[in-house]
Length: 158
Length: 158
DNA sequence: GTCGCTGCAAAGTCTTTGCAGAGAG
DNA sequence: CTCTCTGCAAAGACTTTGCAGCGAC
Image (cartoon, rainbow over all chains, first blue to last red; front, side, top):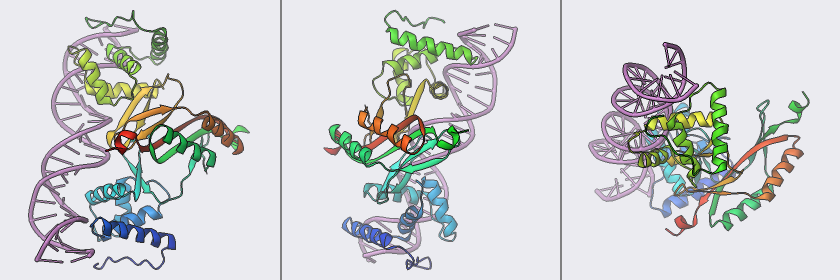
């Protein structure tokens, strides 16, 4: 795997599990497991945010300047990962898709329109309800995003 | 307003109201009310679907072939309308943004990630729950948006 | 060795911008 | 009249594709 081989000793069990799942999938589909694909998975795993293809590309280039990974590879790999249900894409207001690991924990956001503060939350009733709705409408639910906008306590008191 | 003047006799009261609101807004912002803008509003109003800029452009060209409205005008007008909160946009990955009239009743969206089709829904349990959550977190709720992503029935059967 | 994956560059999409002229107020 | 809006075409931004060589298996 050349001089760029990555050392996984410090990775979490969860990540190793994910990697294993992925390798199994790869094998099943007669595909090949490359360093580039590994780095894309790893970067997504270590990121708290949804990443645009270009951000992903930059992050990887910064970490492995000598590898010179191509943006086309990032796009191609992301499509592949998405087809394999390893990553999910979302597009928020602005332009372009953003990607995240499908395996990650999910949460929603409540945003203060006065100070811009963002709080995360998960509500099981809503999560459940969303599955219901998707079902009722004949959809196989993959993901969702929800934002509540309001004024936080601090700003209300000003 | 030239030979292309539109006859509004058959328009609903609701649309006339909308148009009035919009003209007021236009005047307040020192902008000009043009036939192109009117046609874009009207087309959005008469459409049951969320329209991509290009679809909008085609619909208008089909109805008024001699007007020869430019795609750039559609983009520019939509941005303007969005800033004025007259229309709202939804973006969905590969297929770019889609627009709808903001004047509609509140609703959320479920989006097919395969074909890009968008279905609207309202769920009172979720609406209620959102207020609850905002309260619990000390927020005064102002607004929210929610999107469910999935695969629609048609695409599942492919 | 085979055949899929990669980087590069070129080609596609989709959207925005510059400009001169048309048209609303 | 003034000054914004428009159509056109060119430029930008974002993605995909063709190709020859590399590398996983």
